[in-house]
Length: 186
Image 1 (cartoon, one colour):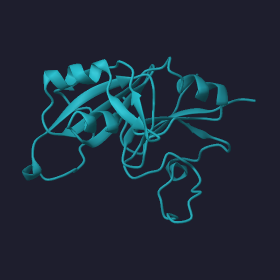
Image 2 (cartoon, rainbow, N blue to C red):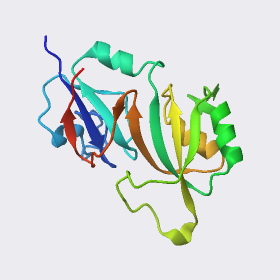
Image 3 (cartoon, rainbow, N blue to C red):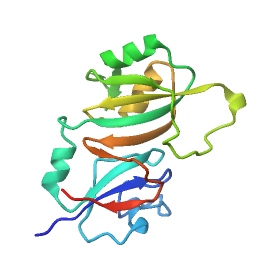
C-alpha cells in the first residue's frame, strides 16, 4: 500500500483529529476541513485545541510510532506570562516535576533557551499589553506527556499564553502559515 505523508500548520482553535467523537462539543473545528486528505489518515502526536504549529499527518502507522517515540525531538516556541530569567532556563533544562494522571512525574532533561526573535511566528492577538509583560522561549523535548510544556512553564511561575510547535525531528514549520498543508516525502 502506498502511504501518504503531510505536514500542516495546525491553526489555533482546531482539534488534532478528523472526526469529532464528543457528544457535548459537536461544533469543534477539525483538520479534515483544511485539505482533501486520503481516507485513514491520522495525526502523528497531538496539539491541543489552544496550541498551534507543525503537525504531521499520515496513513503509515509505523511512521507515526517512530515520530512519536522518544528518539525524535519536538521543538516548541512558547509565549509565557512574565519574564524568563537565566535561572528559569536552567530549571527547565534540568527537568521539572509535573503531575501526570494525578501522579508526580519528573520530566527528562531538555533544551531550553530564551527566544529573542519571533519574526517567524505568525502574529496573533493573545492579550492586551496592560496585563503584564510576556516573553518567548524555545523548549525542545523528546517526550510528549499530556500538556507537558504548559505544565512545565506553569510550574516555574510562567503560565503559557501561546504554544507553537516549530519542529518535529527534521521536519520544520519554516515559512508555513496557519492552515497550510504540504505533502512530504518519507
